[in-house]
Length: 124
Ligand code: HEM
Image (tube, rainbow, N blue to C red; front, side, top):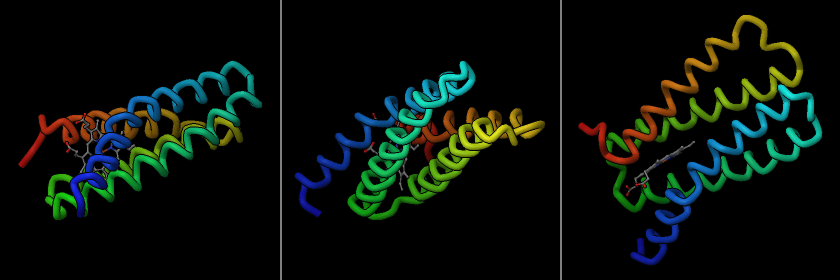
């Protein structure tokens, strides 16, 4: 892979992850505040950021030659996206019930692991 393409993936990845997390929180609290239309729009933008993050992440994975720590980071990131989707969709439908703490738990744990692995604090 060319250095230029790798750089595009890298810059997209590191420039988008914090926005992604922020968009999730904004969408969730709009939903909680009863501003459903706003929440829906922010949720749609959030989904676009999932795509940017996954595509650039896979690009980096290919560029680096599939190191184990980043393969696991990628899988955890998918679990993180799953937790965010469940929190938003089920809260909106009113079907989250007693599962809310479980999904928040998955969200916090996977977010911490993904960020620590991304920054190389957690490596093996
Ligand atoms: C919600 C999804 C994701 C979040 C929040 C996230 C977060 C991060 C963060 C914070 C970094 C460190 C950035 C920096 O050095 O400033 C990083 C790096 C990285 N991520 Fe992700 N990521 C996500 C999804 C993915 C996916 C799906 C993959 C792979 C399939 C992936 C692969 C990588 C790789 C290979 C790096 C290393 C970049 C480097 O330091 O050279 N990420 N990620």
